Length: 94
Image 1: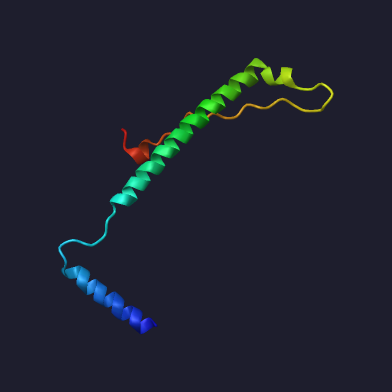
Image 2: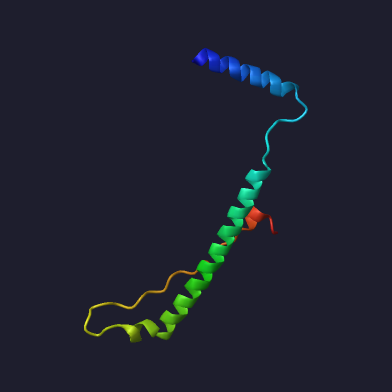
């Protein structure tokens, strides 16, 4: 099997060396990457907003008011905000 694979790879290499352009299409790959980056950006923005809202409720003491005094539960603690997260290095927005 190794000999057949080596011959096929050699023939493809020689063929690709003589063509004007390579028969590969990367446009769908870049479209997928762009879609994934947009989804990550939206999810990050949503996470940032949700974290900010939760922290505001914790600061106001809303969760303390909703606790059942007969159960030994502690109110939620603040979550660190993700305001420093930026996709500028990937998207070249600078």
